[in-house]
Image 1 (cartoon, rainbow, N blue to C red):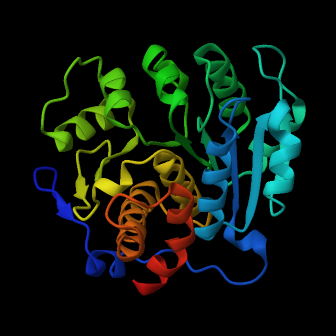
Image 2: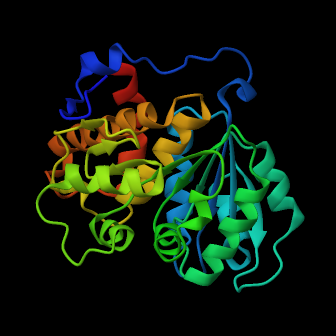
Length: 285
């Protein structure tokens, strides 16, 4: 494990010394991943995250999405249970609380498009989630958190934040992050008492830092962050600890890009293609 002052570089050897849980038996032994997000205009974010969660090894996938997109997603993603959610703030279905209570890992945010609605979903789901579940916050969920830190800081449980640079600025209240993204990740982790994954830098609330250094420019493509959020959620579902899942996800995300580069170039591949490379990258470790 890294010291509080020095980052540990994420390498194959580091991951081999920190192996993922290898559950045996039925699908339930690999946990349940619940992804909550999507809107009428951005249904693909949940699809990308859901595929990545399954490719990372989650045994059961559940999606909670905008009602206007639920039918299409249930056809596009036949492996998943799909629950439809109201698209405006208002009462949420009791079935969502039931799914949250039974999930091993829950991702909130991919594709959501309204901060107030997102905050309401977060309160409802976090109240219902099992104490040992890990909550992944992405996209608009991070915007809601930046406005209302008490959404998680006053609650028990484990949380993992996956900001991009703009979201990191919101979380810190900084106009400029500067060049030291490791320091930014550490500050976010301390402020929100959560594990943070920021452009290959993974920080925990105790100040420890890991750095995956092989990610390239190709990862800066539409939907890539949704894949990363789903990937880490799938690893959490199968039993990984938050910092461990974030490090493995950072490595697999970058490794998937490296596998695609010979076919499509450094910046020519699509986020949906990243997800399909995840199993091979994980297996090669």
